[in-house]
Amino acid sequence: MINIIPCNKSYYEDMYKIHLSVMPQNDIMSKQCFFDEFNQPTRKYFVAVNNNSLLGYVGIFNTIDDYNIIGIAVNQDVQRQGIGHKLLQTIIKDARKNQVKTISLEVDEKNEKAINFYKKNGFIVTNIRKKYYKDNDALIMWLYL
Ligand SMILES: CC(C)(COP(=O)(O)OP(=O)(O)OC[C@H]1O[C@@H](n2cnc3c(N)ncnc32)[C@H](O)[C@@H]1OP(=O)(O)O)[C@@H](O)C(=O)NCCC(=O)NCCS
Image (cartoon, rainbow, N blue to C red; front, side, top):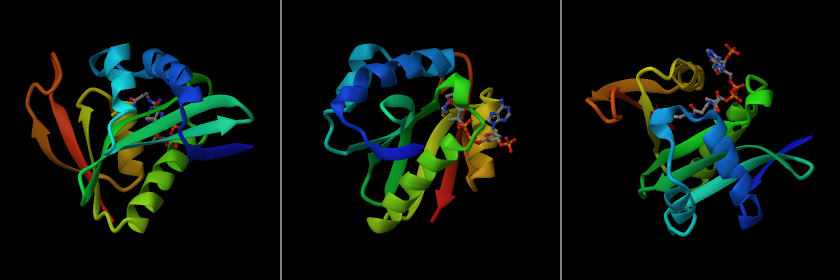
């Protein structure tokens, strides 16, 4: 059974392994940056686990009235089985509980998989940030709660 639970440090190493294995090249963070995020008080992470095995994670940056998605990733072997949706629902529920009004993110214009995923979950594209990534633009997407 898949459970979505708040992240704790026993998952950090495996989260970074998933990050390295599924994130598009443009989105890869150094291990130092990835781990530094966990110590920021405005960040919140949840993980999807089956028994003790890590299937995916989501992290947000809380800016009082918005949750900005820092990263969401699901292990390649179990993608397209609704785990990303479950992670997102957990963030949405948490945002509503805290009277947060929007969820936002930047996504590589070439990351079709993720763009489809966000659109399927109700996000809309509002603008484009030119050359946000090394070679590509970013789409700015919002979900209004
Ligand atoms: C984006 C991601 C988290 C989605 O997780 P998931 O568990 O596969 O998502 P779900 O099963 O809940 O949703 C599936 C939907 O996502 C989209 N999607 C997922 N894989 C896709 C693919 N290979 N091609 C096109 N659309 C895809 C579709 O809308 C799909 O719905 P459908 O199966 O009815 O067509 C996952 O693909 C991933 O880890 N991608 C790599 C990391 C990444 O790019 N993160 C986002 C950075 S901004």
